[in-house]
Image 1 (cartoon, each protein chain N blue to C red):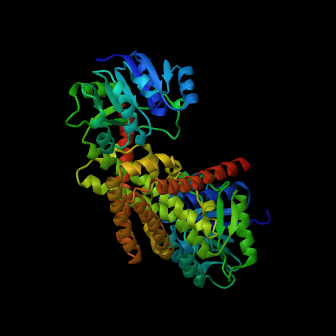
Image 2 (image 1 turned 135 degrees about the vertical axis):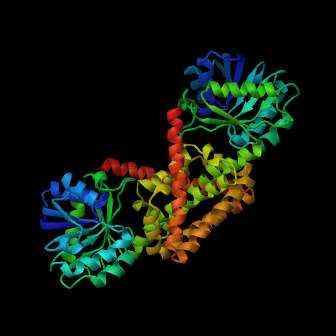
Image 3 (image 1 turned 180 degrees about the horizontal axis):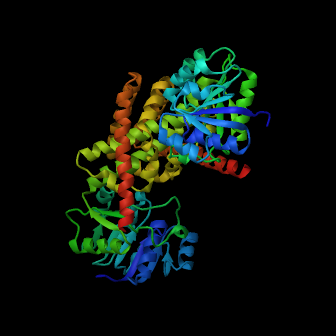
Length: 297
Length: 297
């Protein structure tokens, strides 16, 4: 490893922040790790579990003297966090985030970063259904992608260092334009969540009319709607921060669905078969790729 | 058990037909079971595995002298199968099916059933991703629902007997109107498939424009789109046979999605939270119910 941080500060010691803390400690890449958060119980658990060496609820105090600051708060809080941290950041410090929307975060944060401090926007594509430091584990990022979205202002050395951090965590790092990131995530992550929420609400409407439809759903429906159990707060924030890309991808999806309606209405069984077969071949290739990826690791 | 069949005929010895054969044999409820199908290899496997005692590829020959006939062919083939079987069905025989659409099947089959033969339309809500007799297993229906949809013409004794068969398989039998069945299944099963196919095709369209979006999808996307790997032929048939209910449920879903777009466009974070929270609470209650159901068994 070409890097070592005397002091690391992790703001938001949950699943993501906690897991990266564990990794950096185990690999001996951190002198000490300070956790910053709002919930005392979670911070105390982080200390007890050895995920952080110390903690504070004050962002300014937490980031003082830090060489590397990881912002792992909910995505809507990243800007506010940077605003609080900015006056206390030391020259040469690297600040990176894990927000699942990039353009809005950059627009908000980049102007707040003091001269001599390096901001590297990032997004590790990893997670589980669980949250909080007790859910953290060192293999969370292994074999996953991490997207970094530098801008014209991003320092090359800082970018290399952050790349090294995520590679140390076992991730494959991909560098891309923030808007491209937001468009891709809108399609493969944000759109499925919008669909899952809408589907469950549709079936909920039927329930309200007195038909106990849900009780006839099988395992397929439960699997399919699992992501509708995700945090409403987090997803409302993501919608607000990536609205343009999400609206576009919903419209694309609506066109596909309208096309299906036309085929059904016309009783075009051949057309339906072709439409479904195309989807099946794409989905099957995804599983094969994933299988291959798993084997490669 | 209040029933015993000297001869059972299973037409379509796949996952569903094969599994029920195994159950009826093990429970000593069948004198002999004859399998009928089109694929010789599958029928030979069924014989070799002891799922059936004999087999034929001729429907008429197969149903001769049978007391109980299970039609477990693809849903679009049920009518044709009944047409072939009709002249050879013995007086007093019970014929039942497992089609996942009920009204269209009834409209087609009921007029073909000879006097003195009893037709009981049914739909066991069970299945796996696998098909063919080699995927059959005796616990497939355990703890699952089976819906029977009798009409004015259905014989009460025959209905009781078919109910007993599915209860012997471990299912909870629910009797309801065919149209109600079709509306419920459209919402909790057919609609999710339409959505999954459309979602995968939407992401496929983005891929075509040169953005390798799929490679950034995580496990969530793979789980969510699993049902898009279902048989295109089967789902095209289901669309053709349940078109009205499916079109209605797609329209309901479209309204929900349009409402979401309005909220996103208006940056109504509170409204989005409420919408998502409603879906989450419905989805969470489903999991709790399922957990409870599993405990009860």
